Length: 151
Image (cartoon, rainbow, N blue to C red; front, side, top):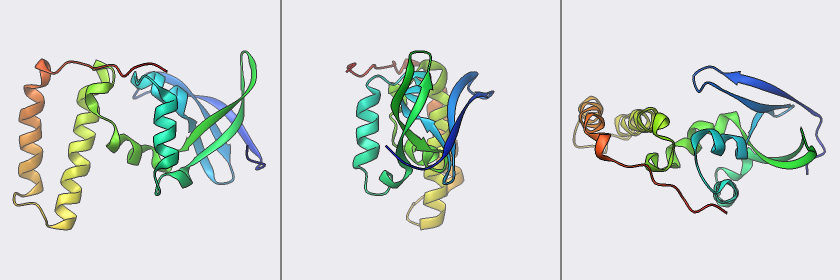
């Protein structure tokens, strides 16, 4: 675990209607990956942690902290808030809780459209892609939520 000085606090996230443990360290704020996965409904938080730690660009945003819980102090892998949006682009929307499906899909569509706009690779304009995704989302009710195998 890290030797840096930090504090932890329970923070209510209004947009998600939940409370998460936030670690305040010299390097910024971190959120407990296990809690993030729980809120989103992603099974197998250790698999998500492994993916983040194995990713050559995201590994620098993952740190382990000793956090206080109701059962005492335990080690927890945490994700820097600056990487939260990067990680969320990698999540399959079908694997999150139904109440997060459309929000995550919309977020990813916006990011993908911005990438297309910046890169100039897309054959269609980014705005047309957003319209296409919005139409798709209107038909997305037939998509079912899939749970990953729990670990």
